[in-house]
Image (cartoon, rainbow, N blue to C red; front, side, top):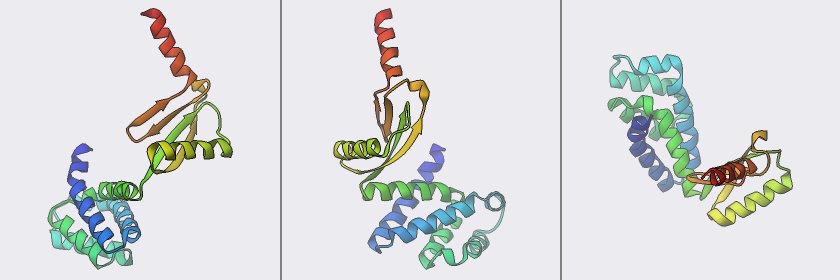
Length: 177
């Protein structure tokens, strides 16, 4: 998977830079999401790994995508086909989304709590996290009763573990030491 990310990153970055330059980030995000879904289709995936000529493959792919891709999107497909990189389209789409989130100063935060958070608690948490992370925050809330109480917050590389389960585990480790 990391090899695919390495292959996809320069294409995603180039597409993102072009989209920003043309003020068409949302349009490119839609195009790449659609093209990524087409590339991930089982039938198309088999075709991508076959011995079809690059021009023919690009034409087939662009015909399948139809009106979903503009001229520039079709050119990207041609370049990817020439370099045998069409299978990387789903990862290109994912990386493009990450570049957009970074550009928009947004971050998705996964919150796992022992009980369901109320709307007021979610709003308070969003406000605190936006202040701490200096970004717009989108919460993904989950419930895990095994935490006993409290919550675990994952925001990119940052993990904030305020669960009672974690505190009890640390206390047990300290007592055993």
